[in-house]
Structure formats: C-alpha cells, structure tokens
Length: 162
Image: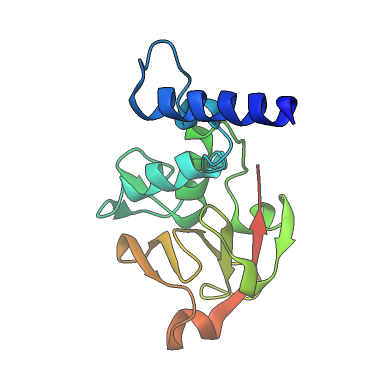
C-alpha cells in the first residue's frame, strides 16, 4: 500500500509541476514526443515539382531544356536535376525510370506519361497532385488535369523515381 501511495504522490507532484512548474526544469509533452508525430519527410521529387512549377508560363521549344524554354522531357529532366535526380532528355527513356505507379496511387512528384504527341509515352509531366500535372506543352509550361477528357484519353502511365 505504501508503494502505491508513493507512486500516486510522485505522479501527482509531476503532474502539478508540469501544469504550473518551471519549464526549464521539466520536459513538456512536446519535448518528450518531438518527432513522434511529425509529418514524414517530403520525397526528393517534391523539389522537382517546386522547380517545375516555378517555370509555369515559360515558352515551349522542341529540344529545349531551360532555363527559359522547355520541351516536355526537358522540363522534367531540368526539374528532377534540381532534386539531384538524373534523367534523360526523352519521354520514352524517362518512361523506363523508377517503378510503375497505379493510376489510383499517383502522388506529387511522380512522372506521368501521355501519348499526345505520338504512340507510347510521347509526352511527360510531373504530378503536382493525384489529379494535376505540370508539363511543357505546345502552349508553354502549364498545369493541367491528368484525367480530363483530353489528357485522360491520352494517359499512358506513371512512374515513381527517387
């Protein structure tokens, strides 16, 4: 009984000290749990998305890879390089990178591919969200839906690189 009373008294003293005691002498719950509930770190491709989005409005030019004009694979190559990821300057070659991603599992930073400029993975962009991409189109660098009537009809697949 004495051990139980002593344990309860110690718990009461600690609780009282935490509620009104000196912060310098006590660890707060946030100190004790730091890192336990933090968001997971962003994937490396998060930097690539930020880089690509910074080029919205830039011109399209066939074969261009920035910094003022891009073609589709030039934009993704340039943006991925900002995240420390090497990629070739070809949408078809980029389609061989990383691992396949199901349509329902697309995440920010995944490469998304379309057959809008010929058969197969003839166009590439970076997913900004599960439903939106940024890419260099013939109208310049822009964001667009992945699965609307036009782009969804040309969707080929997605790849996750790191």
